[in-house]
Amino acid sequence: MEKTIGQIIKEKRAEKGLTQEQLAEILHVTGQAVSKWERDESVPDVTLLKPLAKALGTTVGELLGEGTMETTRVDPETVDLSKMLLKIHVDSKGGDKVRVNFPVSVLMMLTENEELMNMILSGKGGMFKNIDFNQILKLVTLGVMGKLVEVESADGDVVGIWVE
Image (cartoon, rainbow, N blue to C red; front, side, top):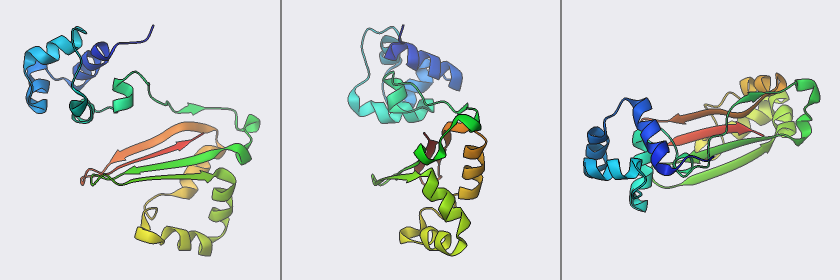
């Protein structure tokens, strides 16, 4: 049985150690509003979903019941690396969104050619300069799949890296 948005809010709020009143204060709503959400008597306004997700340390998708992509480990002998994708998502605080899908086979080729790798890493804006592709490739060859990392910078930019 899928959880309701109210159940998810209540669970995430408790995990963060927040009271209903504290969450309400963060979102500039009443404690009664948060209580109604958690009892599934009402739902948060759509304009509150992003701030609510941020306050609860989750995503809007997870609030809406889409779940999270967990990191898993598979037998590397059974995985065809040529069919795997490395996905990098960057959401800037300014609203820019970048979505890059690298076939793992291309990543393998790049990590073997330092000159080509440096050219890619220093490209437009240097958005990939702090990603250790060699480490990611090691994880993939060990059979690690799914969401590898999600980081929010002090500037509010969010970067997520998955392997599927």
